[in-house]
Length: 344
Image (cartoon, rainbow, N blue to C red; front, side, top):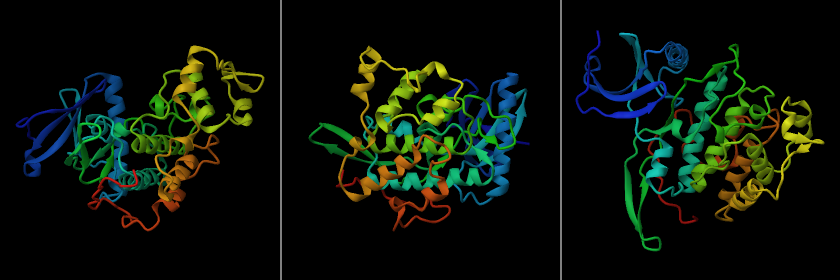
């Protein structure tokens, strides 16, 4: 018997599935929890059942929550509404960025967040799961308290998050190896080329999304800002070089290609947009310091077109970017004071 009280209520998030409310769970001694309430619509209820299945597997494999995936406490059906109770977390890494005028995270903060993300998603892959919807909105700070400083040059207040411990959330699209793999997965900007080209996907599509996320943390804006497949591929080519001919030969999406090359008009208005808004990856470096080059080396390995050649998360965790880091251990969520980096 559960008593959830809406004292100190608040909607933490809303989506097509329903909403997430801040509640007090009296059966857990007055603990504040995030309650995900699903609409009483069969397709959303079925999706919730699949998510519960994934979350129960995560709880079973990681009872001590060492691998930084959000912890589900319980679930129940209330008058046809599936309700999932979770540990209460803070702002998403995207919302913090947005509320901070898209001021990027410092290199030391990016390093800690990246390590935790690789650790959490590697744990999923080790348990035969692909998340399929990794994005900054689905990575939440455990605590998003911040310090404030005034930037004289830009005449504005700037926030620095005090602790970069994060959790990965939203397992509504997570897919086990043996389950049906839908043709299209991932939110557009974080979608891997093999998904766009309908060549089949597995764990590497999460690695691609991770590369896009790390770029966004470092620069404060989305790497692939588009809503169109052809334009998305053109952006990839401008930033990463040409799509491999093997992928072009194998795809059913031949409409995007002509004579073995991307069918794209550089002189069109869309061509101009891509030219003006995209440049080769290394030209986005904010510093020539070694750690910045190491980060870009890691991002480059994650943004390898060929899924079979893309770095794995196990190898990512051994990358020089993470060497000599005090948090290089399982369950790395200890306090990490991300002071603004002077090399920025």
